[in-house]
Length: 82
Image (cartoon, rainbow, N blue to C red; front, top):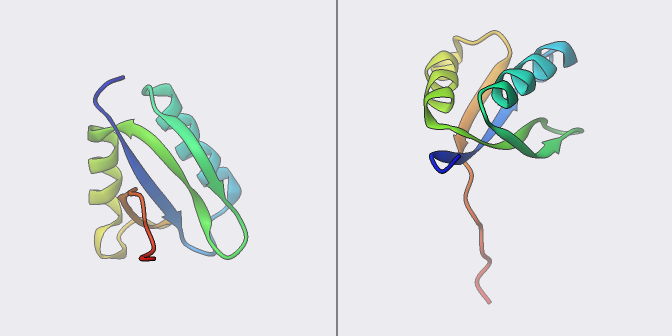
């Protein structure tokens, strides 16, 4: 979809894998695509998803309100100065 934007979704350390899988399934069912998964120090993923889904997740996670999502932010390219 052309209106998909790239976002990073990071879960709280104690988030169960079933919650992460549920969010992945929801994003994919709405036309989104997981582009990278984060495991280890951070639990989460990068995804291209419709902006309305990202806004819903952002709203739900603001102020620590979501029981499992720590934060969501736009994904962007980072460049180191040479």
